[in-house]
Image (cartoon, rainbow, N blue to C red; front, top):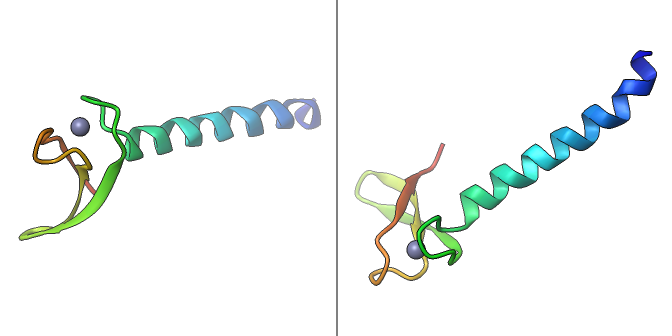
Length: 60
Ligand SMILES: [Zn+2]
């Protein structure tokens, strides 16, 4: 039974990972890719459309 369930678990984990990567690399405001920037307080994700779009996300 466990052997049968494994492939499904693998797929769902892969999809989850893909979804997380999309969220990390695309701006939720304008859909442009995010770029890693160095700021005063360390690295953060910033929208590549900056300064037009000022979305930023903390690097985890
Ligand atoms: Zn943006």
